[in-house]
Length: 406
Ligand SMILES: Cc1cc2nc3c(=O)[nH]c(=O)nc-3n(C[C@H](O)[C@H](O)[C@H](O)COP(=O)(O)OP(=O)(O)OC[C@H]3O[C@@H](n4cnc5c(N)ncnc54)[C@H](O)[C@@H]3O)c2cc1C
Image 1 (cartoon, helix red, strand yellow):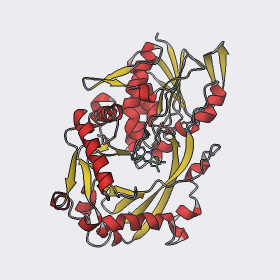
Image 2 (cartoon, rainbow, N blue to C red):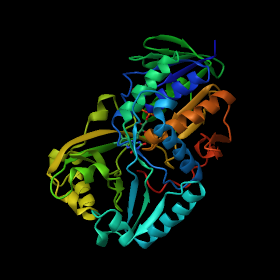
Image 3 (cartoon, rainbow, N blue to C red):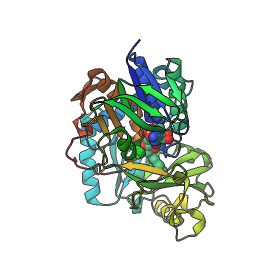
């Protein structure tokens, strides 16, 4: 019998990590306060891009794309959960273009050879719905896209269970038993769970869980984020909408197809953190964000910002729904993937800053390497590279923030 690992949280992170640890021979129990997918994982835009600005994240997300493309063989289920429509970052100024050019050069050095800068006719011939006068250039990566998140966490949970993982839902972690600094057992509302290793996969809840586990209270802010759905009408055909990449306007507003008749839109705006949010608060939409509040709501501002660069979207019939959830955001927008400095057998995987769905497979890879080593590791092997992971360790100095939060 392998050693016992207790994973706390059953979103994309917890389910994929449980699967990886079970493959490595750990005896795994997953404790989930509500049900599988109850947190941000079911409220996400689920974009996945490799167009990042640090080598570790470009390589890490290349690894994630590879796993998601081969999900039935690598994890389970029949469905490939990634839709590779690409990611199109539209750029409005010469400074943005210059920074984007430098990012594309770095991405090429990391093997993301399909990323490219497009301008002029090369952009509007490829994407005729882009308003050429409103945009200076764009970066484009056809292998980026978005995920079906429910497929990821449901199939990962089932695959983990097939490997013997015990998944306990309605099991809120409320305490621990310890010897010295180490945790011996995790206590949930469903009982006592002996643990050689404990994994915090609660993301936006992580600072609160740290108080229960005796870990460091990491600077992870729970920030409310909304998504809106607009009904297709006018000149953009169903086929054109279905083929649309995840498109980011220079303002930061973004969109992607939800299906052939519905466009998902989002825009991360400055907002107060809610450190003590409740489970139900996840679905509470602040009035200024709600589409039914009126045309001066942020919902309509987002729609207008997108219509400026893609006029056909301005012809849509209207906004039909608003949904909400929380980002667990860190000061530098990089997640924490490492051992807690105060609890030697606790791994923290949290603070994904709006990137946890795409990070999922890479997070599971890092967690497996950490679990095997019993301590933080300098690199993890992915796609023939030794990917440096110090950027993600808990004691890091904040690094240069990622330029694009989406
Ligand atoms: C509007 C929006 C848009 C987003 N867009 C993107 C995007 O485009 N791309 C992307 O990659 N990411 C995106 N994200 C972020 C992404 O959804 C999250 O980073 C990701 O889902 C985090 O997954 P997780 O498994 O780490 O956490 P979660 O899915 O939040 O799961 C944490 C789980 O922990 C459980 N839990 C909490 N406390 C306890 C406890 N005490 N005991 C037991 N269980 C507990 C919760 O019930 C929950 O199920 C978006 C998020 C939002 C809200």
